[in-house]
Image (cartoon, rainbow, N blue to C red; front, side):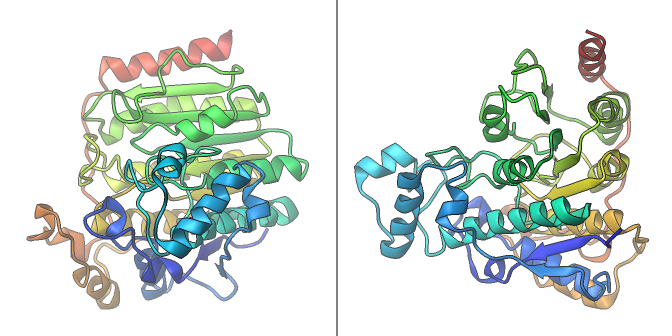
Length: 371
């Protein structure tokens, strides 16, 4: 078995959606630097991504939409008609200088991962992926292309017959769910905040029978996520017996994130990955949402540790601490960051009573498994 593979690219260091956009913060580049500073990258474990080609993107996206994104990147402009048609330059999807290359690089990383998993199995981590809202002919929710869909399609095209996708982002993974709603080969499980944008992912949306939505009320704590993973999602995925498992690890359900109202510690996502990673011989772990630079960096760095079975330090070494102290954030919470954002990798656990709403979600999954 090959050691886990980390996929990154320097484009994330030099590219931003600009201004006060939630994705103006550094994320993937900080995780790349953190795992290096911690000595957690062995020779051969890092792979540079490359942008997906229009033909590769065309496996899911429409060619006229792909061309519009390329043209808008080149000219930094778009007509009113195309803006409305493709949802570009509006709705949180700005026109910016790398608006084709950056998301295409995320897709390219996920396609490299799919190829590696098809050939060799094992584990691949691509934190630049996870853009789960992208539509065939529209940008949506900061997502211009949908790399989870394209990675899953690549593995299906390569001969796999059963793929499970688990989405832990605070927002419903609507683009992936809709792409495979009628495809019984793909199980889609989404844990997301009920009532939050994109206002989809209801409990009763079942698709081809392999679509499972778990809309959780605001205030989710670690024990509630653990209950969902251990009592519902884990058994569900195991019963499906997938050839490959894809986990989207959006960090926006963490307590310190500005775009959600959940209260998870980063340990909740680490536990989820640890609990699920052995359920398939091929594992692709993606990034996703996450809009606090410190919480994203610490969470996603810790996920790499989980994938490699590495021990996390109680206090970060000076090189890693310096990386975190060098970050800045325009939001009010970034003016006086708490000290633990600089010196520790793990948050304090957020424990408590599992609410009846969450227990009901577990029961719903178990009932459907019996049906």
